[in-house]
Image (cartoon, rainbow, N blue to C red; front, side, top):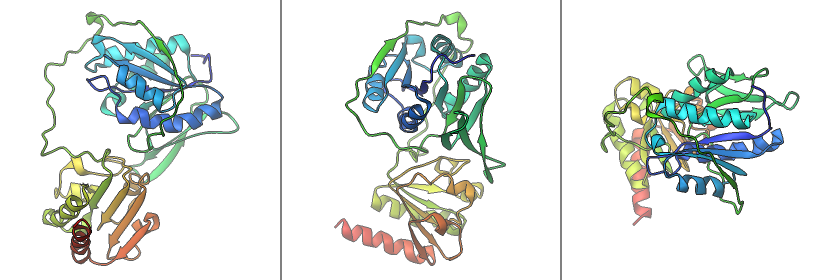
Length: 334
């Protein structure tokens, strides 16, 4: 498909109540810089039901224009409905680039959409840029199990498309910008939706951990030695008002549930404070925490790679150090 504009689009995924999920708003941040480089507008595309809240949020966080597809058939996600809605607006306006969150929904419909458009899709990106010579997007993503980072371009087809991990970018600051809102009256008939959601089973409170939304994360790796080792990490996390994370090594050992996993094969996070306890700092884990404001590493190996990316490092036994941290936090809080 030939692009009709130099606009960059960000897909704003919505919740059942019509508000925006974090990842779409986060992507407006790099989207602004990339749209400026491309010489086009930053356009937010909102698909859902009763989407007023999502539209307002996209406008407050810097979108120049907002395209809205609203209908009851979009209240519960279905691959067919969302793909057809996006296909309709893309074929009508033909942007140059589209960013979609690498959520379960985004990972589902984005490949089908790219196939229909006969263009490429770079999945699970953790870095975005534009090549100054060609104007092509540079999509950076992990490969070979996270051991290497690949830079991928799509020079021949448009739109350029990629899914981007939640938590890689921070939400942009609110602005006084007044976005133009375009409402597309596009509806999907029931016979076009080939699947039916019979039941939604929500994760229990005991199993759920909001790593992507947490301001403070205390994570453990192989150095915690076992499931019991996470107890002192939880004590520190509770004292700080944070949550417990883990490296892939700890999860693979069965010491903690996968929902706590941070890194390329887990969640990409960007808390205000990330405390890594007994984590060596392999590239797979390091790439998942680079968005953190402050990283504190505790490891008895002074040569551990985690110290290369940490803002503060403590060399020593975590079982001696973490309880002291916890007690000091409790004292400071009175």
